[in-house]
Length: 391
Length: 73
Length: 170
Image 1 (cartoon, one colour):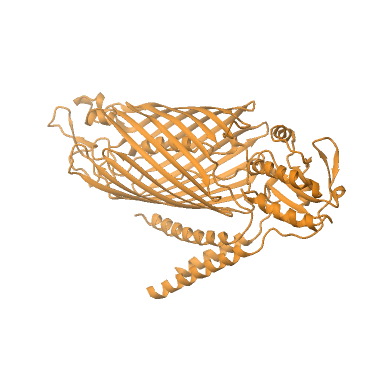
Image 2 (tube, rainbow over the protein chains, first blue to last red):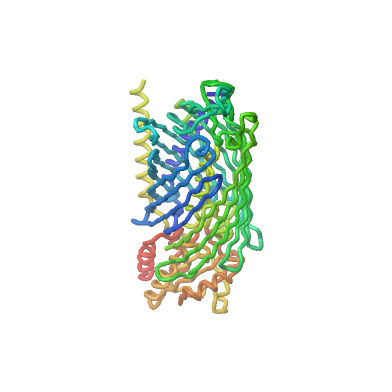
């Protein structure tokens, strides 16, 4: 681990400890209180289609408050995957798979503090992920400041459909600090920092890297990828929401990311919300993302076992992506209907475009052009259609 | 180590005990309470888009939590 | 060394827990002092002055149309008005919005029989140092503030009822 990572880790754990003790102190002061999230039900259909991959499914959320100070929620989420991605086509054969995820959350409110805990279980035929989290949210300074401290722990089991005897584990620990600050009656600032530590089997048992091999017709051969057993990352993000006098809002944000694998990434986003009448909202937004490759990444290694660690996952390559989004919301039953307080019907569409700088399209390869294949690009269409009801 | 923790807590405790006069009064929060100023008004939708990004990007973390709002109760 | 640290942590936690218990039992919501007088325009068009209600128990409720808990509280305030008005009691709703059109619209759906006043310049909110939404102030027959409750949570109306009954008997 680099020196400054160690310094950051020490600072973070100290701030974390100090802030948790502060929150206990705040817990003691009685004053006006905060609110729990509203009771609601959401039903969403999601669809991702791009780069030969199609993933669709539902996401259903139910949230209900009870016993005066508690709020509980349950989320059911499914990914129906049909994959013929470039990795799948070049190293295996197209497949379909279903991933199901169940989450439960509980919030407890006491004066200005909200304590939350939750558990998520994700299951697919070759990957089990169990994540639990605990967080403390505190309102301060006349409810102008909201501070949240969160800790989450994941424990995953990785299997291989081609090798029933294979089973490995991967663990994750994350520390989060986020702050929301009202700057003026029209301006809201958000800040978040998260440190994540991963340990165990962190790669994909199906994926391989390629290396130059003039003894075979293709000019290159495959060997399984090898990743480090640990990864520590830092992410820090800032966001602003500004209310425009004629009733509209503009928002934007930036996130910085780096980790011990040598990846550095920047995310820039900007958006605009325009209401129409008292029932319609229109949202238009743009997001730009770029990252540089992991230290042990290469599209083509010079020979077999060229390094201790080998990766050719395009997620770890040098690339940039653009994302355009539009959304329409229609708010209905604003004055209630039976037991419903209000509702909304929403449609969101995003177009994503990925431009890889050191990941090549091997499906377009000839022995003469090994290592010189065209750089890969892909685009994706993402759809979200959902109805929300508030009780 | 313990000394430094106590020091941090005392400083933060004193800071929080300082009664800062809120410069935005509770009755001036009409705009902040508007759903268009709530970045987390559709948690199911935001969580899904974050998942789409996390699954395809090397970066992860620092998705933002909620705040602002009407400041009621 | 471990033993010493463990004792420190245990005593620290013990202190914190006892502080919490102590604080939880401390009294809240009782206030003193004369209720600042004011004149505001009401929803019916007339100007209403607080001091004209001297001799009655007054529940002053600061609310806004954008405030969820305020909307939740309204029907309960109407119930209190209905029940105790004949004993010399009235609720007075003070809307704190600069633009009262949203409030007027909301009142069409949540009709109440008690007077609603519009504090469009926030002079009354400032005079009463409103520090939370909603804020409920209960004033006795002599024009003195007796209780100040910040916020609204389900069940608070039972507390208001107790205070009103006490002040009505004075």
